Image (cartoon, rainbow over all chains, first blue to last red; front, side):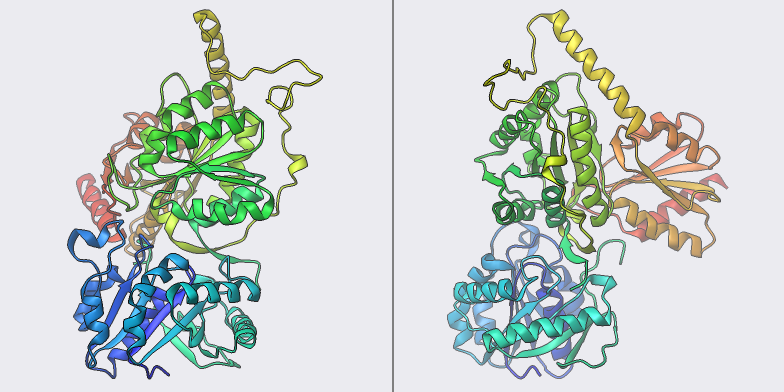
Length: 220
Length: 355
């Protein structure tokens, strides 16, 4: 399912890009030698890929993010290493962008590098989030983020969820929603993300099982 | 789709304000609250409201002051440093007895501090961050669903008593996502009209005057005594708190806001090990539930108060409990959130001392 060297996660705030990026990097590590995750999210103050740097280093997955005190600074920093990693042909790369247009702006600054390599751009959608709760709004945001990032979206990702309260029906209604977005845009839906081991039958799209990495202090 | 929406705390409180009938928002973005301002910028124009990003929190609070004079529902949101800038205006608003709602999504302090979650603005919110003899009602939500409901309550309390109300949230509540059911939109016609005092244009009626001052000290004292009468009514009617696992408990944990959830986790782990411990969670921080806390812990061996600060609510806990039983404290500060394991370890250490 993920046969591109570089995978870019784009989407609105809280669509699930970071959980998907972390899970995808872990999944790719099972079959690939060198895996790097670029934390290009300069927007979110909490629940970021960079919070998992140490845990992922244990599994030899390189999370590229600002270091030291800059890790928790409220500053829009993209580390200089990012371009080198994107160019490095023996590294499998996942890019976790920030949400909304602000997140897409960061992608635009490295879009030429991304396009020069063998890459795919995923647009992650949770239809239970505000601002992507109708097909029309979702398509509008997809178009504007894509323009802002100067990247073409190759695949849609169904990440329909209500956190710990997600049911199979919620996931399936997300598939129907994403199919309508796909019909509207001509962009194929590549997969449905599922967390907490929810069993999904009668699914339309391939299922990607995820585990929760971004936890609140009382979930730890 | 389902009735539930997956929302960040900041977005949830903003949507709740709109559904509660708020059509006026003035604010200035600050982490970890910025999604609130951003959400209002997108949503208020859709519902015929007014959004204005001010040049600073000082002007935001004075815009709230002006807007509140019209008797319409108005809200601003901010975080620590911004809330400090608003204190002068808040004192004026309390003095002028204007209904208004403030949301402080607290981050590490003092000074610029950091952008991680904290509860160290408790003193500022509950003891009057501005000058003069005033109080604001302070509500502390523990879940995003509760935050949605307390935003509605905040506007109702503000209208009922003509007082500023503060929602004291922490960065964690602002930033995390949970599924939420929003209430119905309040019919704007059904809200308090405030026509007896609000500034709506004095054509064909006597002019109204809204002011926070009187240069005659005896008259100003009378105004102050009127505020105090109002505060007595608020204390009598509006106290909220929650208890869990208290009936058979030997020990009581006390915490507010999201700390209540960490303590919930501590209690589950402790009870698995046979330690009988319960939780008392104040929901109104002002008025503080002194009597309820005193009664709830009367038969316990000790109280352990846990905060994301070096100890602020502890002063009210001690006032409630007095010398009748030991009151211990554990806190982390500067944006560090205590995890359930470290709190459980502290709880066990205190239990060892009793044995």
